[in-house]
Structures are given as C-alpha cells and as structure tokens.
Amino acid sequence: MDRDKAGLIAIVIFLIALAWIIVSAAVGTSSRISSFEECLAAGYPVAESYPRQCSNGETTFIEAVPDWHAREPECVIAGCNNELCVESAEAPLCCHCLHVP
Image: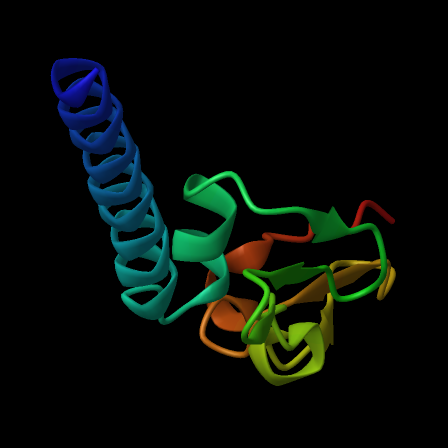
C-alpha cells in the first residue's frame, strides 16, 4: 500500500513538473515576440483587417504597411505628344522626336 502511494505521488509530481515546463515554455515564447512578423511566424492568429493584426494573447502587433504616397516618384510630362509621365531625371533622356513636314 505504501508503495502504491509512493508511485502515485511520484506520478503526480512528474505531471506537475511537466505542466510547469510546458507553461513556462509557452510564456517564454510569447514574451520574446516583438513584431508582427515574429508573431505571424510563431503561428498566432492574424485578424484579416487592414492593416493585419496578430495577437499572442498579451500584445497585439500591427503589420507595417508601405506608405505608397511617400515612395511615388515625381512625375514629369514628357514625350513627343506629352503622353508620358517619367521621373525628372529621365525626362531629358526619354525621347527623340522626329517631326516630318
């Protein structure tokens, strides 16, 4: 009987230790995430919004979206009939117009 109790106690202690290790690993992983990309790579759920959002249960990370307006080049009208929009550096090199009388 004492042997059965000792075996049962050992199993309970083992299960408690295993649960503690699993919980510690899960908490440690989520606290190391610091960006949307890391959250996505870790497999946490992503809200299909714009911009997308990923939550690890503690923090919600928002996907960085490019600012297209800031990256848009300056447009200069060019071409023989003003039909082209090119960057200002390319305008002098763009076209050679041939006018036939």
